[in-house]
Image (cartoon, rainbow, N blue to C red):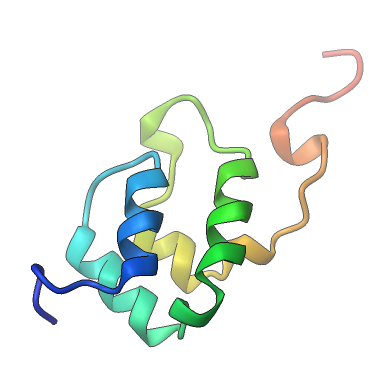
Length: 85
């Protein structure tokens, strides 16, 4: 894959992803998982995803893509917002 000719959807995904490490691995995961046709769905989910504010606990983009994390259910408990805490 040519780093100067990345899929348009991936370029938008990368711009929105909070942790900027492993871009090459992320681009390969994007292609491997057939993300380009559903790029808008992925980016929409990404923007609502409950990432930790601490960078060390944010997954690399390739891990997020390979895990199809855009399909994860978004719940209050996933955000760590437990009643009484």
